[in-house]
Length: 195
Image (cartoon, rainbow, N blue to C red):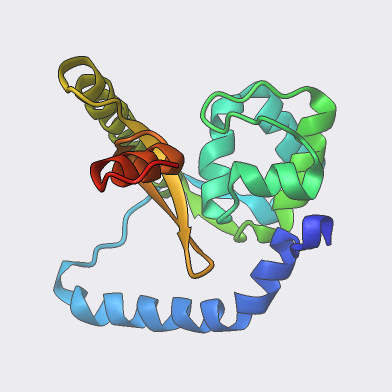
């Protein structure tokens, strides 16, 4: 186990039986809930069970943008690739992989792919992942913008601050004074106590 953690394959194995059972239950529930609205349509399907890991690697090399929806369909994030495969800094939305890296990743994800997936399903998975990423990125910018404006227009200096209480760590996005030591110093001086 790298760094004391199990691999992604270990995590998937732990939940496989329950996830497979839930899949059947959800499919039944969807069919019952939407029975009046279900239609059979012809749709393009990628048959993963007919391809080798090398075929998958070639597809990833030729069209790197497909990596994110494939990973998302397998519930695999970039940190699992880094931890389990030692491939660092993979931008799953715009990957730049060499052939060897693509082969390693393809061999890694192939067992987690379903026998087939519809193209509209994969593209929707990618869309949901992209929306989530952009929202989180926007929230991160929002916190930075607030901190910058507090420092520009405020009297005090603000900074992100981490602190621990009873072995639990917390983080404040904007705290003043900028350090615990400065807070203690200010408190003591307001009480007339010199240090």
